[in-house]
Image (cartoon, rainbow over all chains, first blue to last red; front, side, top):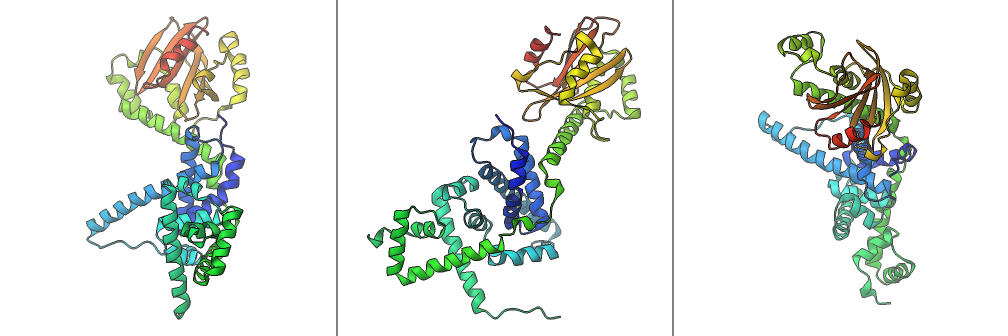
Length: 170
Length: 247
């Protein structure tokens, strides 16, 4: 079986990073996620089921890494909070984080799985079937999730437009 | 066309450009007759456009050399070796550093005179990533180099049938003269070492396990050979079959 072509990987890299950024909403975590995913891909390229679509395969690995990591860190945060007697430790607020969130806009407010789906379909141009494959869910779930995501995004965008904008005053 | 045939799934398919020409015309007709639905779909389209625009600049992320595939492969290889070393060291319960090894040798009777001790040592040296592995020979130069060093005894075994390819060669020194270790790896990164050294005073042949590593060894002509695998590597038996009669 042929090896993963480095040139092909390099070409996909910007899109993987973009997808990761939309998931993590923080550039540093996004690159960590991409690195972990690529390492996983490189060390098990021979388990790739289909010959054709490297992109879908890599995106699927990345999304799975993200979901697994999320579960782990949530457990960890809960444990930390419990040990420290705090309700929930706040995430570090860096300038990067703020900028990434601003760029994502309302999308950043959507639940992870809806955000991932919208990015795959709207930005990456994935078919519903590909998106289902990447996210590891049936196509029916993709459709219902897409419906919820669009509704929620709509209501947030409309809400923003109707609300006076907050201005940062120093 | 009957507008009752248009479902929400069709509307999404319309927005996402995932409909065939016929279905697309059907949705267009439907939307022309239903301004409320047309407004909804137009809203989805605006959101999609905004999303695409905000994420269009994939190339603008600052370059991150840590993500380059070549570098990742090197890093993976280094880490695999470190893991193998760590596993071997933990299993033995010793540190191969200056003092620990000698102390252990003193307390374990006969450990200093075990056959092919240098094969296992060499595998470790090769796998030791604390200071980085010693600079090795690239795969394509291993064969000529072995032949030059060891003449007839230095044929590079073909282990392709087990999915193993030579990845690196390393010159080593023993009490009896120059030795060499060739590291093979399969697609999953499992590593196997082939070791060649001048025949010691006596003919040695057999196998032994140490620290999770299995060394199988034999002597032929002026040289002794060993193949070192992880003790649980299922290919170990086949390897000795492949190698022993040939060399």
